[in-house]
Image (tube, rainbow, N blue to C red; front, side):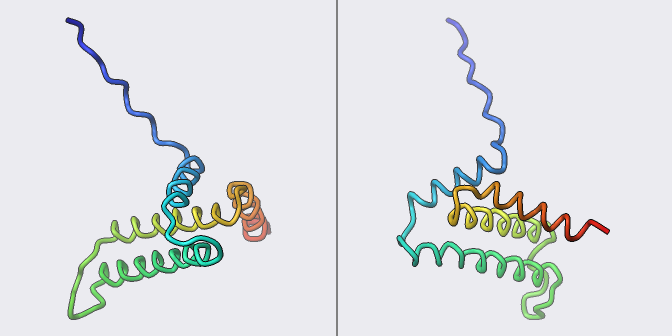
Length: 115
């Protein structure tokens, strides 16, 4: 009897493949269509930014009733959620999200880093 080997797991997809996959999944499971769905997708970003604020407050113990409830690693995770949510929101607005983002990033770099 021969031993069957399982294939190694696929490596993590690149950023833009992941954004496309997440957008596809969310689009297939959206609760609202049209402009309402679009607005709700954009508002999700505000929710995620609020979670960053909550994690920072928790990491610094600024709420005396709760004390320290989060770590700076929690803040990192919440910031990642903001980035992912923003990129998926951008993909919701345009199938050329990568090109739009890279063009905008180039303009910001030029404006900020050029003496």
